[in-house]
Image (tube, rainbow over all chains, first blue to last red; front, side):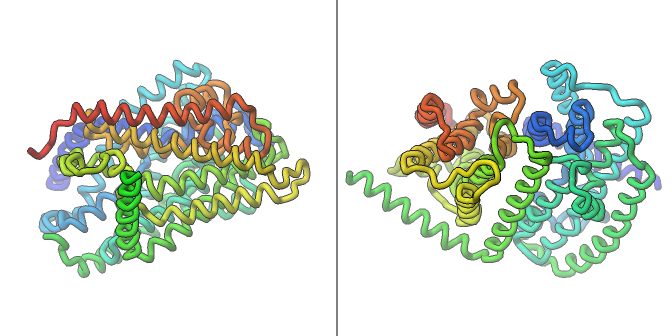
Length: 262
Length: 270
């Protein structure tokens, strides 16, 4: 236990220091997540949201919350891992007495920590430009919202981990991840609130893991009525489904790994 | 003239070699095709939601918005074909110092950097975009039927599309060239790609403040909305002339910036 704590602290502090080195890049990555705000612009100009029973204030709160949720659930594991595996940098990591996945996981968490001030500044700027946009969520919504963001991140991480293990078999696994991005984009609630979907499509979307990654945490933070228990149960169930798949694929992949370039 | 032929010959060599290299990965073709069709289906679905109760989007009809979306898909395909594979490499050249070799070549460095490779994987997007435009033009809609545009409108639309390609290229090139000063901006072009998604919808669909930004700061309006207006035969001559002027200014701007930036290039390796 003590050992685990020491390793975790060492990994987190070193990865956080590394991420601070790249702060200029992280600012740019944060800026590249403006899609929910652009969609807010389109939706507020269209009468479709009002027709679905969503008021202008609900709409702006939803997309602003979706913007924040998206900022802290970005996963880029597959891009880094593909390069590490192709260039043989993975080999020394594999020799260490700890799975290299912990290194990638802590890198993601540190990156999110370094995003906090950037997102705060972006929100402050938005508040100055459009004062009606910013609001303070209730303490309960904030508390459950943060937990939901963390859970959503974990689910997203595991989902990409499944594809990441394909790197052991293919040199172009990141291309397959681009295909997974499409249902993620359109069914997660980044570009349109799930409530505006036609009922059949909505049922279909809810059966996938995607709405739980953006729509559920965003509506929690925005103060919409949501079934908190159902949301967390769904995320945990999906995680429990993905974990053994990841484990098996990872073990099978490692046996195939031939240390390219090393 | 001889100079022009030399550049043409170089271009043929560059592109045939890079296409041969890309065809080593046939699986990519299927991934690209699926991703283009998936993205298009998703975008049409969202557009359908936005038109939910039959209200026009910023004064645009359903068919008109489809044309805007088609133009966006064409431009995105062009980005994948030419801009992404070339201009995202400038940063690498600067970081590793291999820009030295580029500058030493007896060929214009901006030309070499912008045309060295081509990726065929943007073609599905370009074809799908043009198909969507044709379908939206010919499909009889319940409200207004546009029919075939006159040859004058087609010519104007083609000119404006070329102008938007030039604007897009210049934006990418300027951002990539900035890495001479800020070496670490390799993902600045990604930011550009994600904000240009705004071009999927006609610019009048946005609130006034965003409309101003998308016209004067980040010229999204000139990329998709104005060529689409020309195709629909409702373009105003002022905006058409403005688009052509913006294209000219952007191109000369990128040229001047590159000439200026080279003075600040201090080779990384030597």
